[in-house]
Image 1 (cartoon, rainbow, N blue to C red):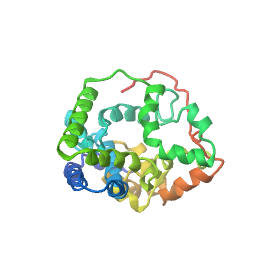
Image 2: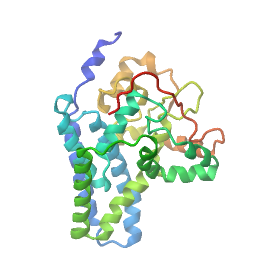
Image 3: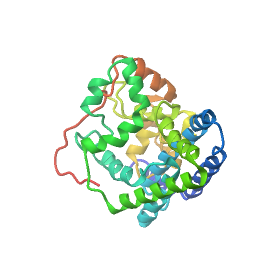
Image 4: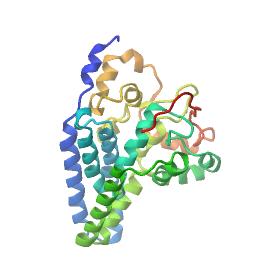
Amino acid sequence: AKYPEIKSLMKPDSNLIWIITVMVLTQLVALYLVKDLDWKWVLFWAHVFGSCINHSMTLAIHEVSHNSAFGHCKAMWNRWFGIFANLPIGVPYSISFKRYHMDHHRYLGADGIDVDIPTDFEGWFFCTTFRKLVWVILQPLFYAFRPLFINPKPISYLEIINTVAQISFDILIYYFLGIKSLVYMLAASLLGLGLHPISGHFIAEHYMFLKGHETYSYYGPLNLLTFNVGYHNEHHDFPNIPGKNLPLVRKIAAEYYDNLPHYNSWIKVLYDFVTDDTISPYSRMKRHQKGQVELE
C-alpha cells in the first residue's frame, strides 16, 4: 500500500529462459569433458565446478516453480521448462518440488504440511557437533525422503513425465558418455546440496538463531549464483516477484528490511550451526495449522 511501484516488479523474468538454457548446455559440455578423466579428477570437478552449477540449477527450478520464466498465464510452459532444467541434476525433482514448495509458502512451518521442517528424528538424533555435520552433508537425502514421511501425496502425471524424462536422459548419458559422466552428474548434485557454501541458504532461511525471528535474508555475493534466493524475507513477502527484482524490493521499502537481522556469509551460517550447541534441526518454528487447508 505504501509503495505501489512494487507491483510493477511482479512480472516474468524472460532472462531466466536463456540463463537456464546456457547452464544446461554448460553441464552437457562438462559431461563430455570428464568422460575420459581419472576418477579423482571426475570427483574433483564434480565438487569444484559441477556442484555449483547443479545447486544453482535447483534454485533456477525454484524460480520456475513460481512461474517466473513464462508468467502465470503460461503455467504449463514453466512446468515443461522445469523438467528441462532438471536434466543436469540427475534425479527427478522439478515437479515434486513445485508441489511441496507452494505448501511451504502458504503454510510456513505448519506441522505435517511444510516438509521444509525436519522430522522429530532429525531433531532428536542430530544434536551434537559431529552428528550435525553429518546431517549437513546428507541434507539432499533428507530433503528427498522427508516428504514421504511428513506429507506424502498421490503421484501426479507430471511427476511421472518428469521421472521418465530424467531416467531417459540418465540412460542416454551412460550409453553415449559412460559411467564417469553419469557419476559426475550425480556426485555434483550430492556434493553441491550437502557440505557446500551455497548450502548455507538451507539453514540461513528459517532456522531461529535469534528468538522471535523466523525468516532471515542473506545479502552476500553468492546471491549472484543463486538467483537472489538470499533475499528471503523479501521473497516470502512477494513470492510473485522474480529473484532478479528482489534487491529492488529491499531498496524501495528499505525501512521494512534493513533493521531485520540478516546474514552476509553462508559459510559462517554453516559453521555456527554445526558448532553452536544451542542450535539444531529442532531450531525451527512449527505451527499447528488451524482452519481449512488447500494443498498443492
